[in-house]
Image (cartoon, rainbow over all chains, first blue to last red; front, side, top):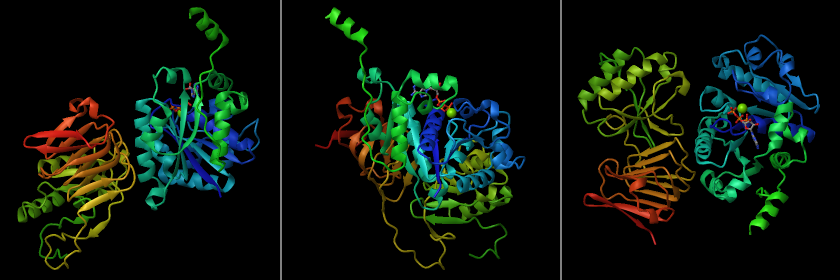
Length: 271
Length: 231
Ligand SMILES: Nc1ncnc2c1ncn2[C@@H]1O[C@H](COP(=O)(O)OP(=O)(O)OP(=O)(O)O)[C@@H](O)[C@H]1O
Ligand SMILES: [Mg+2]
């Protein structure tokens, strides 16, 4: 049975697109057929993070409006055979996204793929509502700071009230992905603690992705971090998260500050 | 419900399990508002102090009418606590929260229609066994509200009676909304943005810091609100 997953957050810039690409690539590497769908019409990013920006011919809006057939718009990843991208339009108006059109495209995608992963735009407007509407599973991307957590709380309420599942009296399975977690700042008490975020949002934890240069390096070369630097801490966190999405139970580890040699030596000299 | 003897369209009002009344406006609005006015004249106290939800399904095709409707309702003293039946982005005015999940208990004006069989007594308490999330508003004028879970920052619970939160209260709790000074607010962990009972309120800044994060209750003593630890 195909699963529709939305990556959502309310707040902008928390790591939705990064997470969509990483989870999509991780699931595809595990042998599943995956499509990642960019719902951020007008501000598309997923094609860049996936390194497919020069291969975009048709997009989601073209398919919705009947200007192209779905197979013409799908872009197959060059690194992982079972990974595909359905890009958003950069030029069209957001209003071109219609509920009816999105529903049609999602059900066609469900026939072709094991996982349909929808990268939501920020906010609680139409684009975000449509991205979540058909979801079976939601990954709520949150940074450990108070504004991001409150926005996520709001989004969780909408997942419970406004999705197709909610309308049928069913529930969307919700998971928390804590991203851009900075162990040094956590140590200094400058970020919300993991347990506080969990207490506020009270949904299960899918993983904690540390703030890392590896993410920026990967997005600069146009590759999901799990493909570009599979041994890096964020890649390992995403690979574990993908395993949990497939039903495995693995303990979640809180990233710890590993002090570099320099700071240790320096610390000793001062003492 | 008979409309034969009525010159104006009858304004439909539905009773709900947790929201008192649902209005169902239809275009043309002048005519519908005329019907509403006639009805309010027949029973002037009908809407008094009651929270009302507007079902805008019939206006979905003409969203430009919504702003005017909101003003017209406000000028009649009708307090909208929610809307339903319309896409939130279809309209650009500031609207009350969309509601879903309310159970319709009767059609027509059950409260005043003599031919309707007496409805079974409605429960005077509301139990929610999920958290109330940021941006959500739970309004229950008839009695107590119990939440088995937390009330998020930016969420609110409004009750005619007392409010019981078996989790952290981070948002607002408004108890005794229709003039019940005996109502109280209880929570397992107090982080509230606002506490109000029968119109008297305290914001987070006025709550003693040593009570933050603790189990607590609030009640009225004369003209002041008392907030105290529960143990
Ligand atoms: N774990 C991380 N470590 C370091 N940088 C990160 C991490 N996750 C995301 N970023 C960076 O944060 C920025 C925003 O990330 P991203 O585009 O994935 O967020 P988004 O939620 O999709 O944003 P928008 O709401 O604008 O769509 C990017 O520059 C990205 O490289
Ligand atoms: Mg994005």
